Amino acid sequence: MTEQKLWRPTRRRLTDTLLAALAPVAACSLALGGLTTWTGAGKAGSPARITVSNARVLLPHGDRTETAALFDIANVGGADDRLLNVTSTATNGRITLSGHRMLGSRAAYKTDLTSAGVPAGGMLSMSPRGVDVTLRAAAGWRAGDLVPFTLHFERSAPVDTIAVVIRPGGSAQ
Image 1 (spheres, rainbow, N blue to C red):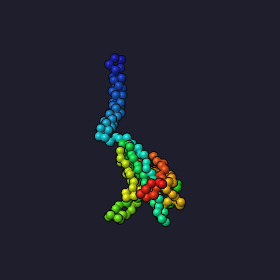
Image 2: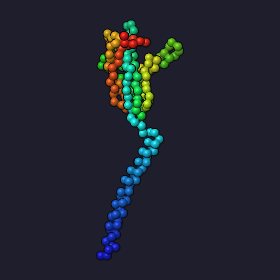
Image 3: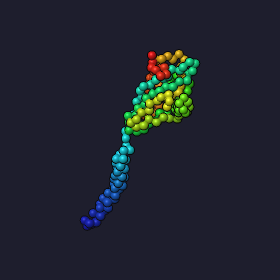
Image 4: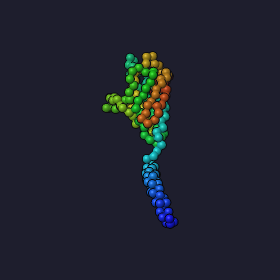
């Protein structure tokens, strides 16, 4: 056989191998280009990172047992998150997220919420006139008592915290 006839099958295998390798290289290049564009547009932030502070429970007044828990929830991460649920082993009955809207100078109404947003780099600061956690107080709570809570988020791991029972408009004294 001549040298040229031997070279043709080898050349064909080499061409087939290069063509077979080209498809994954092209796919990887396209993916890398897309990720570079996504990052350059500011869409590839860090995940949500949640911290909870200033946890407090308002002491119910008189014969009432329904009250509110309030938390300051900070998201120091680069992605939005949502508070979905709050649980506690130290309360009686159902715990709900609530929103309050003022109708005038002295009137308001409450509505149950399915979630509350915690923006990236921002904070959700709960108050009796905005978003809060509505719960039924356990018998015998006094100012200064500590109540454990777990806050559950859409993207972040649950956060355990301890809230102090305070008098409305005051502190735990």
